[in-house]
Image 1 (cartoon, protein in one colour):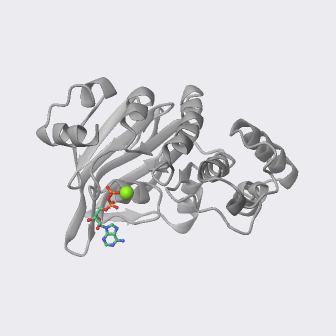
Image 2 (image 1 turned 135 degrees about the horizontal axis):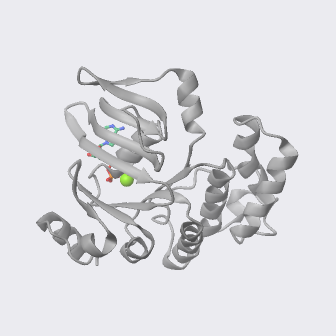
Amino acid sequence: MKTDSNTVVRLSHVRKSFGKNEVLKDISLDVRNGHVVSIIGPSGSGKSTLLRCATLLERFDDGCLSFGDLEVAHSENGAAVYAGKERLHEARQHFGLVFQNFNLFPHYTVLKNIMDAPICVQKRDPEEVEEEARELIKRMGLAGNENKVPCELSGGQQQRVGIARALCMNPEVLFFDEPTSALDPELTQEVLRVIRDLASRHMTMVIVTHEMGFARDVADHIVFMDGGVIVEEGRPEEVIENPQHNRTKAFLSKIA
Ligand code: ADP
Ligand code: MG
């Protein structure tokens, strides 16, 4: 299946079970260039599993996945068939991932955390990477912290290092899994500010979040998941301000 040139990520009819527990039930999602998609929904609804499937940390059982024209998996006789190692490696160059718990290397400095993958995985020129890393550190409001190790930073600073690290790979799309849920409110705001700035620069992003105000402001498209299905999706003013489904209404009334 050919994707149109505006589609950065396409998931179609994805199914995934853990044992007898079907966690993703026929999920389809297109992410368009320059768009921000926000995934919301109760705990256990399959949001992280969807992100892990999209970023190749987890294999799904059936369905298709492609990044632009690069097909990663297609469906054949009711089962997902994945591309070979080389193409998966190529696909990994298309996206970055920001985790809930930062996942920084604890014994590496800020600079080395950011520079490691571009040099070791992408085999880029270390001097050029360092220049870019220093620029990203400034953009993230982290100037002066280049040689610190993660435990010397606040959670909000660590998460901004996580974002800089993902950006230094020059991804076409960034995935965030609850990037602020480990942070207190003040530190949450400084991380959300950085993500808002990326949105204003038209970075394509998929963000799982419980921050409804942020999702409403920043997202072009909201996806509400519950029980492994997309119950409702659309523009923020539709889904958040005027939800149509009872499950969406119940979720939003609890979180507000
Ligand atoms: P969310 O991110 O929306 O909270 P998850 O994707 O983490 O939801 O989980 C969805 C369901 O899948 C839950 O029932 C969870 O227990 C189950 N699950 C997630 N990861 C695994 C795993 N590695 N092994 C078994 N079950 C899992
Ligand atoms: Mg989760």
